[in-house]
Image (cartoon, rainbow, N blue to C red; front, side, top):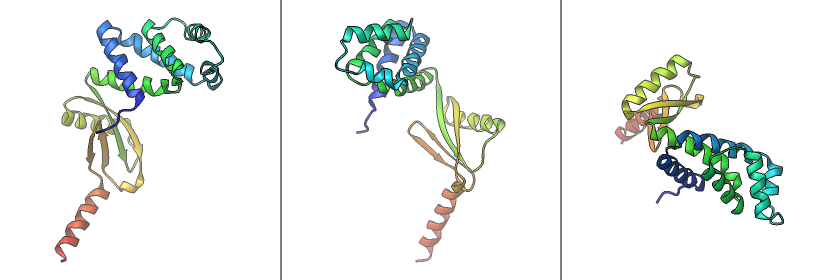
Length: 179
């Protein structure tokens, strides 16, 4: 059974609450604020210190976060009480991905041998969108070792159209016929 990261669990719970209360964007902004706050290592150390009473931690969170979604503030307090505030960035990123999926948008991690220009990205996004029957946003990376073509990872699907893969398949078939 596949393991789900704790950040993803929190993000899924946040999305369920956001959908239920029709507060999708409010949660997105609030989770991003919490993630930004969690980047301050000194503040995180202070908030996770067992010497500081919880009510002081909560008021410090309220002061630093300003006006955010009430339930998101409760999540921040929960993360602080469990010593998991460092998960905030992961939670925010996972929430953004889940929110995109909720709106019918998939993210594709695409690896190519050469850098893609905007026109190529758009064309590839359309082609992958037709395969997935959803809108696809591409996160492009470059790896010259694939020689040419592309490798796309969309969710749990892998599409390997690389020259390196085609050469490997050809090599295996030639080795198989040489017996």
